[in-house]
Length: 203
Image (tube, rainbow, N blue to C red; front, side):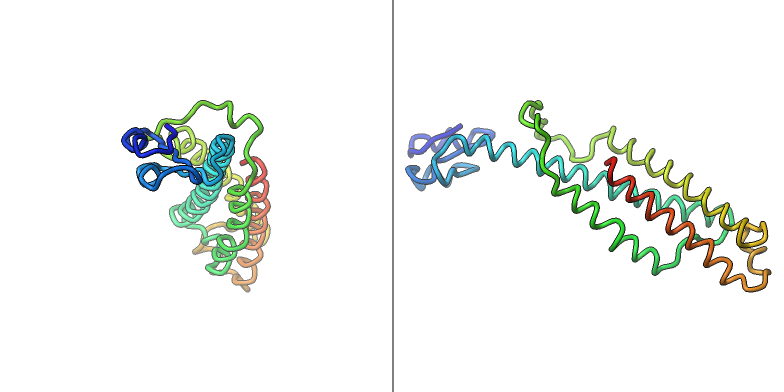
């Protein structure tokens, strides 16, 4: 609903989105509206809808990427603890992943321009959550696939550097086990960094 006069105020207030004119509109109309057109140009509504949809899609991409990689990281550490193999990541590596590997790609995804056909898409329901059910499924599946790959790489690295041992109790009995374990953890860490970068390109 658009309006500029005092008589438009009730309709602007009751509308799903009330739009008042910023130049010619009265203060009553502006107060009752949800949005004010500062240039009184109706074309600005189209631009605002397009920008809003692009921002919303960017937020969805941001959440989907950051959640999928964090689910994967939690899964990997959980598997290590349950199975009894050394935890594949040091606290410093976890901090590096969060600040350097995860954050910049997710911000870039959130600032991506909208798709060309974004205005042709159907309006979403007002009560629709940002993360849809299919997105949750996709995030868990992506996290599971990423975890399987990285755990497999880590186990192969443990076998290579730790004389075929993979369990924590056995590795701690080896000579220079700290150095051997650090080498295996580094292989898993680098593999995860590359995998997450690839994941950001297909998000």
